Image 1 (tube, rainbow, N blue to C red):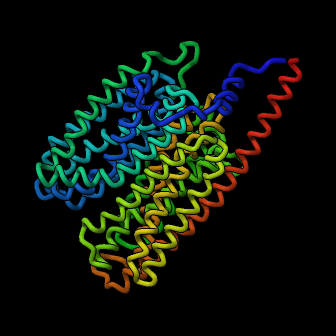
Image 2 (cartoon, helix red, strand yellow; image 1 turned 180 degrees about the horizontal axis):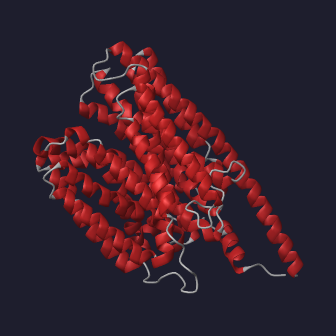
Image 3 (tube, rainbow, N blue to C red; image 1 turned 60 degrees about the vertical axis):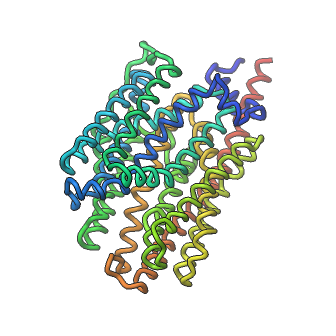
Length: 497
């Protein structure tokens, strides 16, 4: 008896030696353009997610629209999630190269609309195009990692993508602020055009011009389910702007119910958006995707409220408050490099639960900082939060592909950045509801702010603790699956002899 071809390839991808993989190989001529293209594709998405909060307040002074300013982020995020959700389907239909080039055109069209905008609704129209195009680009860039790199380099590439996200979290607002302050908010948007031109040139150079096999009937795009998912994410974002706590609670509860129903419906669909086993607690893919969702969901507490707290509770300047974000990003990047440099794949996988553990430790530190009114705890806590993501994010992303069936890997990889963005969106809404329940607003006194921010980080700690439990379960389930696969392969080899 012989192994099926796909099973053989799958087992080789999991057991191929990775000890020879080095960071320097990513910069060699064979892989430099590929590395640059995939990192740039993700960077466009990550930086634009953080760009707008800095640039658009200046735009409001010129073109108005302060009342709908928050929608610039909301619409970008919603359509990025939708783009990511449909990316695997488009890749299967038209091939990666054609899909990436088309998505880049959509992104540039959105950028031009935003640059030329004379009113905030026009900017919002541009953000819709930007979000949809970049959601597709980021998702397919993740999907291409195992296709364009040998197994020994895949951990390094995922480590590089993690560094891109960490850099964007800090560098996005910094670059956007510099360009806006010294030139114009329109210039901050215009940076996307030459960056996209470089990305297109790299795609033409490295991504093969091929399509899916013509013998396979293209799967229909599930427009109804995508509409339902978009509505759910939109409601989550809208819940933050509700005028009353009951309305906010109702909007958030409705949104989460819609998303849960969408996941349940997708599991039964003939042509699903999600990979098989997504969010199932008995499979490593299911529990791992919960970790991918819950870690950003918990960390959103710091993204939304920490800088505000440093400035308004402890009177930090904007630059000094931004230093805490820089510490988190630096810690994330350095830890990601260190973990991706480990030679043992098994050791990297065993370290995955350490990420949620460090995240929980960091969020607990922020909770205590506001409880005892001591800002000095903020900085080591931010280092712990960054290290938590750095130590687990790249390996967790790779593991999600390893435990997916071969035919589902495009869905899984494309889903990762989409799920990460959804986590931040849901987390921001939950944190907003929590803070508002404690009386948080711009006119609140210091004592009220302390209480509200303390409670926000308590909730964040509970969520990160759940991600720790699921991270431990993911590693156990993955190890059990690996043992089962090895036993099956050995039995088949023995039967073949």
